Image (cartoon, rainbow, N blue to C red; front, side, top):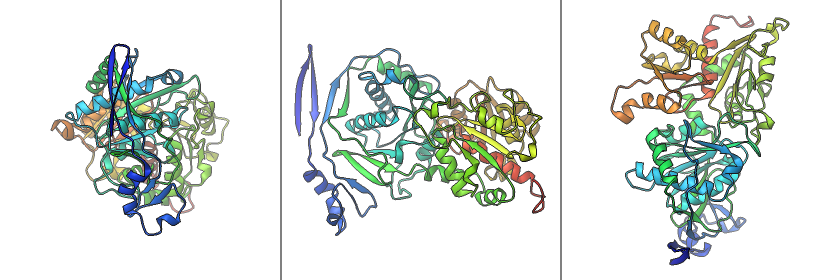
Length: 501
């Protein structure tokens, strides 16, 4: 252990730095737990009795880097979004993340966070930013840094990890409760060189950071004088097996976690997968457009691997850094290929030259980070406001709500009043909020956060193709798809085998 003092201009910067070799740390922390045959395996990664795989990399020193404030870091309704070249400027990511961590510590009563999730939607600069962020988190003393295998996770899946993981864990990727999540996404904005990148923060209930948090974060970006990082740290292999652990400092480690399991558990708590699987084999058809975003791999896991639908049900479901040169916004303009395949014109009206009986029964699309959705039927476009109202009016078809009903619904101000009409007829409390999912989060977490009335089970949505419920604290495109599948399944209960749905 050593303390260094270096001069920068007229300022003295004290740097607490520690260097520990593999021989010291891994011998003490990991080798003691290694099974008898560990040394017969290739050097670099081995399994421990805990089920984790320990990376054999040198633990480098923690350093303090002088910096100065950078203008323009005020987060918007869902994080900070800039052109990727701005994020690549010297100290830009580092300044923002150090300010974010300092803000999170303040909101945690002055205590450093124990566990955090770091994940992105797979857009250009995702992997590089994860490396930088992991080093800053470790240098600040965050003990557990969870990164999904591949570095990619949809925004609702991040919320599910924060909300659902428990102290006892649930798999080979360890245990613990995440106190927050750093999400690398610019949502439905394009990705690639010259395009957009963004970072947002989700708090301890899985919800987007509130205005108090983001205002404090912005103020800290105006006052920052230094940030901590781990010097000369080797890159983390984001494609390493689930459970692989990288010890970045003696007290901080990265663990590669399963991207799917917690989110899958959340969806299974909402829907009857057995019934949906049966419906899927009875003549139902769907065409899902992942728009080369994060949601595509989750759609494949759920629709194909869990529900047994054919892979031909998917299009553009492989995540790409530039979203395949497309604009990953699921609307009539940018999901034009899906729109055409559903027998629709560019304005959403039916193309009467198309035989509707040859079209998929349900069409759907996700945006870049998998939280938005487009819904269409054969020759029929469902507006976001109507989709939300129809889900509310048919809530009995969704197991999540069937037993208890709905205790609340909400929409954004620019949405149509369709939901209001349904809610009044159904005697369900209805709220209208400013645009921004954090406002819905306040309602969903009214009891948890404010000791107020419990409005869950809850449905909410906004005009910009966002729909969700209280299973997570983000809008969720795939949840909306399964909600519509459940409604269609219920509507076709009386159809005999062999008859058209």
